Image (cartoon, rainbow, N blue to C red; front, side, top):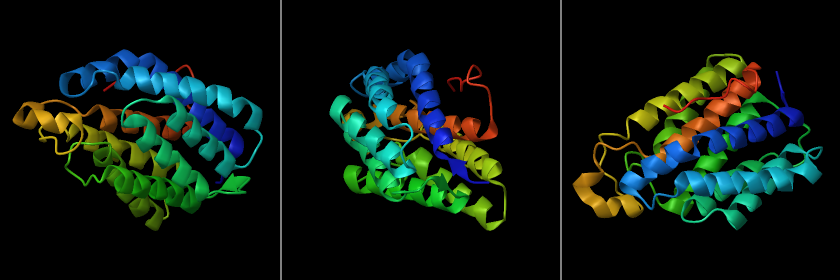
Length: 220
């Protein structure tokens, strides 16, 4: 099964809806260890994404993702804008001109996005950042691809791994970003960036699985 450009648009629209619903939850997580604005910023960013996508929704996959990235860079404050913007810009660069995206191409694009985040944020696994959700998700996706799983199963497994990685940030001490200023006081709190990254991948999985838009991903 290939991913159509219409499905990519549906994913981005679904994620925008999830972020809008979960902005207070994400902001609450961020209030404990950050600036307390992650959900608000992400919601503002994805409302901008919806506006910017409208005139290009019939374009190729690369254009859709790069438009998303540019909208986020231009509208999201703090670290979220550059990091999520880089994620989508790098992913989009991998899919330039694609009218359909294979499972291998989709995972490669997500992996390119992760590499962009790592380069931009200088974060490694276990630093208590969005990398802790994205990296295990890509690993799991690669594993399932190698085993010949369907695209739906690949992305469901990736979302499950992201959820596990998100939860695994709770006992970690933050080593990057504002949360790192708290030292040991950051221990015991779930990372907001890892949480929004999980929600992003779950939204992608739900889109590919045909889960109705009304049955949006809930907070964890």
